[in-house]
Image 1 (cartoon, rainbow, N blue to C red):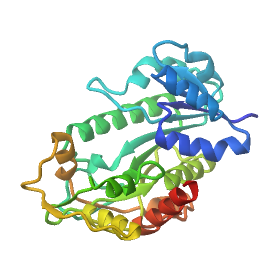
Image 2 (cartoon, rainbow, N blue to C red):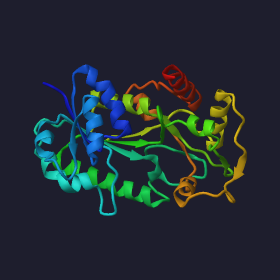
Image 3 (cartoon, helix red, strand yellow):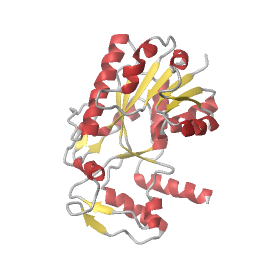
Image 4 (cartoon, rainbow, N blue to C red):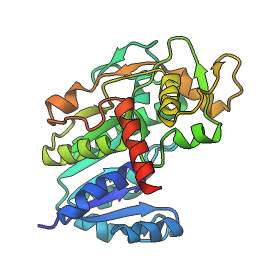
Length: 289
């Protein structure tokens, strides 16, 4: 049977998974809201469908796997709201992956969290993800579907690293006392999803992050060091000129445990810390130059 991944919101993480699956003979359908992006997806081997224009039901009917990375809105998850019936009627569907965020845990003052930690989000985005997780969980349980939830830490990777800003002199080392973030390279997201596809576990929740939570200013400093450029000056969070969106990312401080992806899925991280991740990104950029 041909494996067919249907991807709701075929963005950065979904594209990384597709890069693993396409060489294995998978067929991949990805949705987008942009006609221009649809052309780009087609060039990479993805069958694109445009939300609001194309009928998704025929492709969903053929899907063996479903990845949901589209963001929820104030009313819940729009993909589930609009396409629940088509999902239920997909006769071959054996795996659903929902991409959430570690923001669902809220602020823990730099302490550790794992998949059993109560969900106490500190931001509106986090609360919307908690609601969407619950919505998908209830739906999957009622319909006996195999849903896995993946809580992603801060994502970086090709074209999403700090080097461009460091080179341009626009990178900032903003310091908030005790602030620490977990992060993950997009290649590790892809391998975790692939491992889950190989070992589906209905109802499972997985944190996806590396082994080395770190203050954000340390990451910028290491990027500057790799480039041989001066370190951006330190700025106090309390007085830094920041947009409300940028400031909201500092509302939560926590370290995220990732043992479940290792023990249950057998994952060995490609980039277990930001240093190795940044070194690989710079090598990739240099190779393209």
